[in-house]
Length: 326
Image 1 (tube, helix red, strand yellow):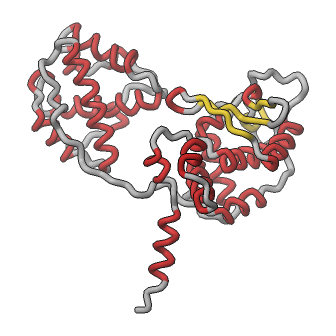
Image 2 (cartoon, rainbow, N blue to C red):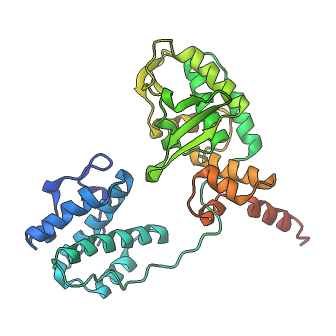
Image 3 (cartoon, rainbow, N blue to C red):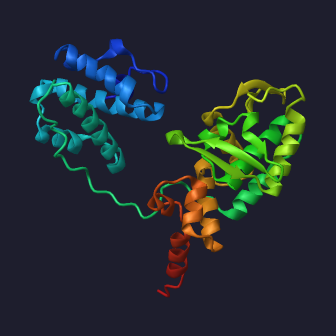
C-alpha cells in the first residue's frame, strides 16, 4: 500500500504539532496515550527540524498499522521489521524512521500504554558512508562564482557577502540566515562572527581579512547608523528594485540565491550552500590542516562526520583510474 507522506503530516510549519491531529490508533488507547503523544512531540523533541521529521515518520508508521488493523499494544517486532522492509525510502531515511518509532514507543512504555517496545529489538539497516553525498564544488569554481557577481546594487553586495561567508567560515546556511548585526563582533584586535548552530551550539569564528572587506562593503550600502543591533545582517530584496527590506532572509532564500548565482556563472547547478562546507574542509586538509582543527571549524562533535566532508580520496581515485592503460 502506498502512502503520501505529506498527507500524513498535520504540522504545516517546522515544529508545529496539531494536538487535534492525534491519530485514532493513539486516542483509542486512552488518556495515557494522548498524554504520551503530546509529551513526546511538544516536550521531549525540542529541535524543530527533528520534531517535524519524527512527526512525519511516526504518523506514517501509525497509518500503516491502522491499514492492517493492528492496535498499539499488539504491534510486534516482526511487524516493525516488515514495515521497514516495505518502506520505499533510502537506508539512511529508514534508520531515521526507526529511530523516531523507537523513541515514540519508548514514551508509550513509560506511560504504561504498552508493556514492551516492539521496535527496540529491530535492527536498523546497515549503512556505511565513506564520503558524504553533498554535491562537490571546487576551489576554482568558488573563486569564479565570487568573481562573477557584478556589484551594481545592494543585492549584489549582499549575495557576494553570503557566499563569501559560507566559504570562509564553513558555517551552515541556517546559521548564516540567523545572524544579527550584534553577531558581527570586534574585540579590539579582530572581527568575529557568532553563529547559533544546530543543537543549541554557539560558535565564534574569526573573520579573515578579505571576508571583512566584503562584509564592510556590503554594510556600507545596506545599513545606516541608526540600525538596531538586533536587525538581521542579510535581508530580503524588495521586488526588482535592487533595494533591501527589513525582513531577514531565510535559509531557503539563501539556497535559491546560491542556485541562481551558480547558474548565472555557468557553474554546475547541482551544488548547494552545503557544498561550500565540503570544499572548505577538503581544501584545509589538502594544505595540511589537522583533522581536529577542521572538525572544530565545522562544529562537529565526531571526527567521523568531518571525514564525510573530505573529498581528497575522490581526487586520488580519479588520478588512479586515469592511469589505466586499457
